[in-house]
Length: 112
Length: 113
Image 1 (cartoon, rainbow over the protein chains, first blue to last red):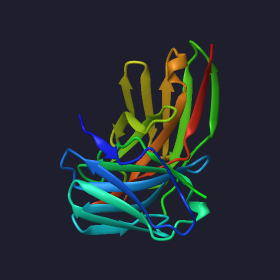
Image 2 (cartoon, each protein chain N blue to C red):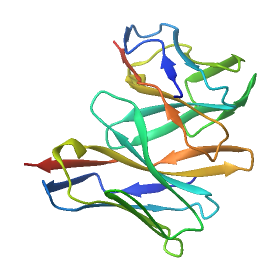
Image 3 (cartoon, rainbow over the protein chains, first blue to last red):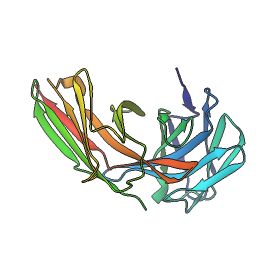
Image 4 (cartoon, chains in turn cyan, green):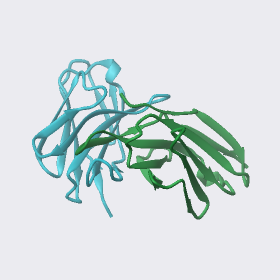
């Protein structure tokens, strides 16, 4: 079974802190994604990566950056956390962009 | 950008059929997906349909696709309390080779005993 693992289930950070959310997949997938999930808005794509060191902006990239130094790992970085970034963050991977995406359990981030 | 729309809430009684509807905009989508999210969990793939099909059945699940109207539906027969969850419709969109799934807002299905 494909496993996508996010490093934390719950995080509480202070406004202005630099925050790292880590995601690892074990199926040698080319594509990895970061979404945020907010009630009534569904999942919105922040960034995705289709290869090592390659990244593409999604629908809401402002305030975020990403890093993919190794194929299995995709990190989401909040350079200076703000309260409007309080959300559930979901990482996913897929073999290629059209195919089924496998999701991690999510990280619920609270910025105070 | 591409848009996927769903109603936010559906309530049914146990044993009834549930129908969750979705409209999408990207006519170049190869696959269309239904995902299920149980409380406190990530998303799990429930079923999918290839864009050249108009129906797919998988046990209690029936997916109908109307490409002309860009309308997708998920029917759950004999709905059980364990089916209570949020259901997301998704399409693949973007440039060739750099595609990602675009999700709807999710439909919360509540099954009453």
